[in-house]
Amino acid sequence: MSGVMERTLAILELLGRHPEGMQVSLIASELDMPASAAHRLLKELSQYGYVRQLRNQGDYALTIKLAGIGLAFLARTGVPDITQPILDRLAADTRELVRLSVIDGDDLVWVGVAQGAVAGLRYDPGREQGIKVHLACSSGGHAWLSTMSDEEVLEKIGAQGLKPDFIPGPSAPATITEVLKSVEEARQRGYAISVDSYHAGMGAMAMPVRSGETGAVIGCLSIAGPAVRVTPAQMQEFYPLLKEAAEEIGGAAEASFFFNRSRAHAPNTETETETRQAG
Image (tube, rainbow, N blue to C red; front, top):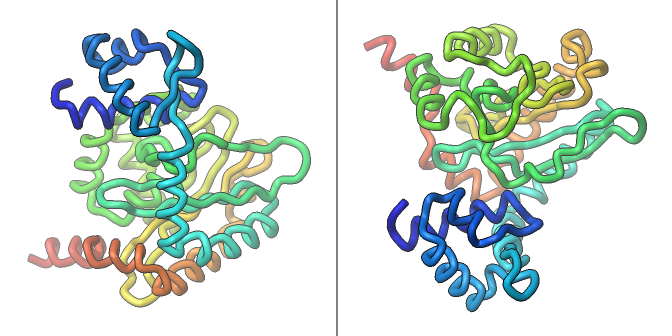
C-alpha cells in the first residue's frame, strides 16, 4: 500500500471496524505498511481530532468526529426524514428487523434500520449501519443484482469479491454459479431470499427500491430475523408489506436531493439491458 492519502483512508476505515481501538503494530500489519508510517499518520490524524490514543503508548481509536460528519451529512440529505417513518411502520407490522440500503456510486450502503422484534430471538446488527452491503451473500445484494444483466452481476461480484471479510453463514454461495442462480430466482420471484447465508441462523428477504418517477433503482429494502421465524413461507406473507413500503419510499424519494443526485448519475439498469439486448 503506497500513497499518503490511500494509507490515511485505509487507517480510518480499519479503525471504523474496530471501535475498541487497535495497536499501532497491528494496524501496520493489517494494512501492510511500516509501523513508523502508521504511527506518523496516526499522530497527524490525532492532531486533527479524528483519532485519539486511548492511553499513553496504547491503542488508537476513532473519535466521534468522523461519525459526526457522516451523521450530519446523512441528516442533510433528507433520507432519514423521508424513510424512517416507513421503516418503523414496516418493522411494527412484521415484528422483525427492517433495513434500507441506498446506492452510492458503485456501492450499496446500509443507511436505515428499524427493529420490530420486541421479545424472543432477534437480530440486531448494531455495527452494520454505514457499511457496504456484501453483494454475494446478502438478500439486499441479490435484490440489487437482480436488476442487472448477468454480465453486470459478474462485474460487481468480481470487483467486490465472492467471499466477505467476515465469517458468513453455512449456506453462503461458494461459487459464482450459485450467485447467478439465486439472482435469477430473485428476478422471477420479485424479491431475493437468503437463509443461513449472510449470518448463520438468519433469514432475510429484500427487494429493490425504485424511483417513483423514473423507475431507476435507488436502493433496497429488506426484512430479516431468526431463520426459525423468518421462513420462506413467512416471507411470502411479508411480501405485500415489503412491496408497499418499497413503493412508498420510491415515491417519496423526490423530496431528497441525495436520491435525485444518485438518480442523475445512475442509469436505469433494466432499460439499458433491454437496449443492449435489442441491439
